[in-house]
Length: 169
Image (cartoon, rainbow, N blue to C red; front, side):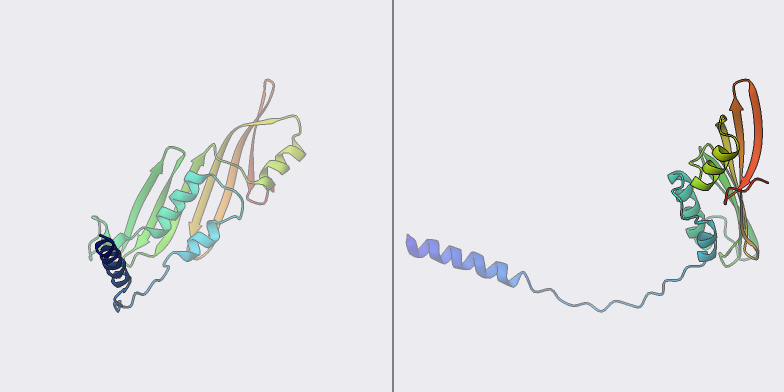
């Protein structure tokens, strides 16, 4: 009986030893390139932004126009609109898939610290009731970011515009 148990144990260990050999397979070369890296670099503020806004901007940067159902060789310009409940982005791509320009509008997002501090410093008794974040990106000029805020202090209402650095416009 001992011989049978030792035989089964030895057989069981040897089959597992052979299963550890992994055959090597040569893979084909893959070239990875970022066509719209400039857009992501200009949009990134380094601040903690609203997660849905970041995800939608990444979707715009990684969108492949050539694999979409709208792609045809005849056209040189494609306007694609991306929607989420917080806002939308209208993006223009060329025939090669390069992002040429965007127009973005988001409502009630997380404001950057510089904007919050500027409003608090200039209007200490006021509260921000609504905010709109506007971005205009062009390939030649980069991104222009504007924040439109609605402030309230009791019955008084005030509307202000700021840039991403917290400077009033």
